[in-house]
Structures are given as C-alpha cells and as structure tokens.
Length: 195
Image (tube, rainbow, N blue to C red; front, side, top):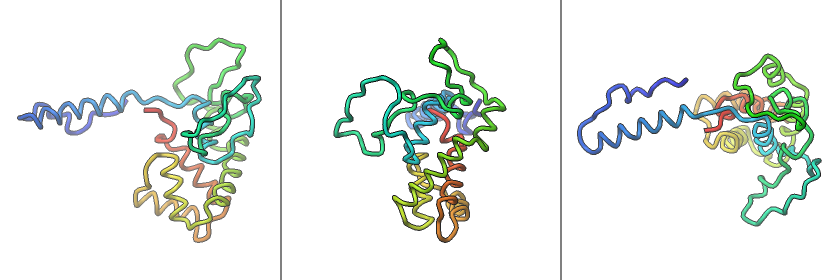
C-alpha cells in the first residue's frame, strides 16, 4: 500500500488555496491506492503495441469490425483476447476459456516471475520487437530511448533513466540492445500497473 504523500501529514492549511491543496492531496493519494496489475491480456496487448509484434489476424472465430479512421495505426492490431493462450499469458493468469473465473490472483507467483525473467515467449517477443523498432526508427540511442519511454510509460525518461538506456543501447543500437531496453521497461511497475 502506498505511503501518504508528505503534504498529507499537515492537513488544514488556511485559506481557499490551502483547502484546494488538501483536496488535491487526498485525491492524489486515493488515485495511487487504486492501482492494480494488468491482466495477462492487457500486459500482452501493451507489449504487442510497443513492439509491433501482434499476430496478423485473430485465431478466435469472431467477426471483428474494421477499425475506424480515428484509431491510430499503432493501435490497429489483434488483441490478445482473440488469440490462443500462450505460455506467457497462461503464467500471467489467463484462465482457460472453458473455466469460469471471477477473480484472478493479485500476487506474482514463482512461475510468473520466472516467465517474466527468462520465458521463451517473452524473450522472442522482445527480440522481434527490438528488430522492428530499430527498422522503423533507425535513429540514435537517445531518440530510441525517449520514444520507448514515451510509448510505454507516457513520459520521457529522466536523466538517470536516459543515461542507463543509452548505456544499454550502446553507441550504435542493435536489435539485441533494443530488446534488452524493452525488457527493462516492461518490467517496470509503471508499465505493469493500471491506474
């Protein structure tokens, strides 16, 4: 559970601005408390969107309407709910479709941790994604790192993160280096939590 923000310890500031600041602090703290982990399908959808590795067509016998014009091209991909469950999705808690599941586990299991660290499905997706990203954005390490952080986390990397990312990518980024950086980014709680 997140700790209260420092300015919540002294509520009751005088004046209207103090009251607004107190309310903002309470809302921010409540917002942080409602974070929950992605489902297996959400995690895989995010990974596929980031790496451009989604399957070309759904495997489920479902009629899917065409995407409308306002949907950006990077979001026009087959969702994980419409493909067969792979090892990664299964270890992340995706149930068999024949079973009725009302609640999924909240805590990371040993199997999930192992699959996230060195599972074949995730490793192959990251490797393919690294090559895709390098092919579509053949710019320098700084630009690739900034783009990945922005696409994955919705923000630019801070100075320390940028330095680490540039170190991982090297002077001349390779698909393996980009895959390593992707692995680091998708392991961040910031990527794996829904707020």
